[in-house]
Length: 242
Image 1 (cartoon, rainbow, N blue to C red):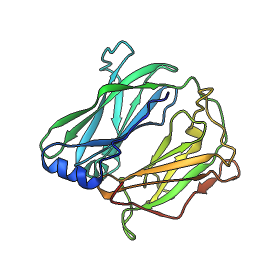
Image 2: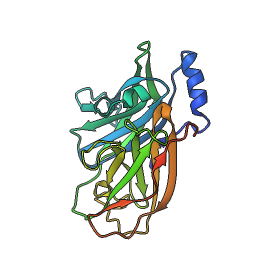
Image 3: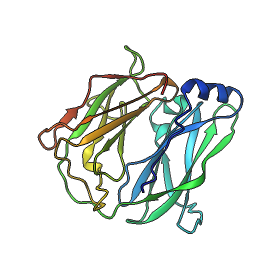
Image 4: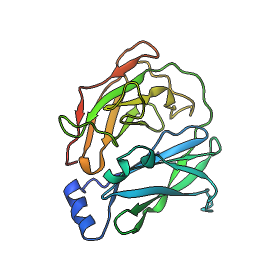
């Protein structure tokens, strides 16, 4: 069974804030995203402003210290200060199992949290094939007026092996508060090649806003023309409880 999501379901943002003030930062909403034959990403939420990286191991639990990683949170401000963490790992081998742990470093006191205690498994996809899916677009706000910059949109579609994600305002056109997710980057859980999305599949969307809040909803992928941009719902306003 795919082990891609570890969620502290009982932890509300109020509880996270209380624990953080007590000197115990909390990690929640850990999810593996954007897996392809050569790379994958890990996203999660920290309860306070933090920096992020990961620890990577092979199947024999040997540390792969020379693997290339990029903190996307550092590139998409104010994600770090909101506690929205995402790290890209690349330069990997296709169809290969890896073990990963997240590393969260508090900006307040430098405390390092390694989570989870037991690394989770990620398998890279076999190979890429051409598909012609739509691009999913969504407006995201953290209040009715304020754009949700630093928030991360994660989309899961029936039949995929891992979800795909996109940052608010990561592209100039359309600009913030839009987040775009390219459904061409989905891979099939059956073939581990790119998944053709035909319309009508169930799609589940999560928005990680860190201390600004969280949102989740489900719907059906519209029957749109290939290569088009689709919008699933009205603008999302983040909720401050889970």
